[in-house]
Length: 239
Image (cartoon, rainbow, N blue to C red; front, side, top):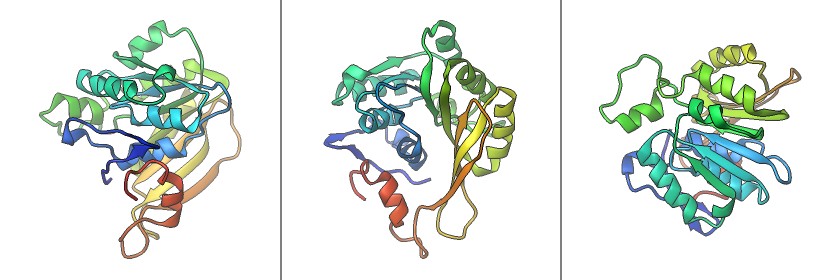
């Protein structure tokens, strides 16, 4: 989906490498996921340049957020963005794989959020950083689900953004780890078109599922819908 630059109140996030600009997927997930209550502990898995973790810090002013990133270049960008933000004291960055992180984690989390890699067995990019960010080799979905299931509090939730055509398979895998959908947001380019992305909130117990459809642009494809503006408007530098 489209890329853009955006701000957190008066703090602007930028990336040194144009190829790693902020994408709509991350912005949507960061704006949509449940930010928890007072003092919530959050974990951003595969934080990239730190966008979702920063959005979490803005949305919940008492939360403490840990972020995990395996790619050294992205980790350096995230560290710079965290240090330059108003919420640096509430953000902690771990430059390692999620499996490694799970091996030494000592706390449970109220919220885990991830914009996970989604390409399986497709042609890989010559840039290793982009390959790690986009291909499931670096974070196989079973590893994400197993780790999240082990780190969530009893009433915690895992929120992810996925290609719409892979959401059913991911949901089926999640059930095997005791994680069940509670909310979904189907994202389509314009009203009436096939969804391209699915945002899903998983919890550790079965219950009803709240569903919603979001169109990014109005009919005609120019600008943004009112719902998209309402959801993400606090974060974009230009909307």
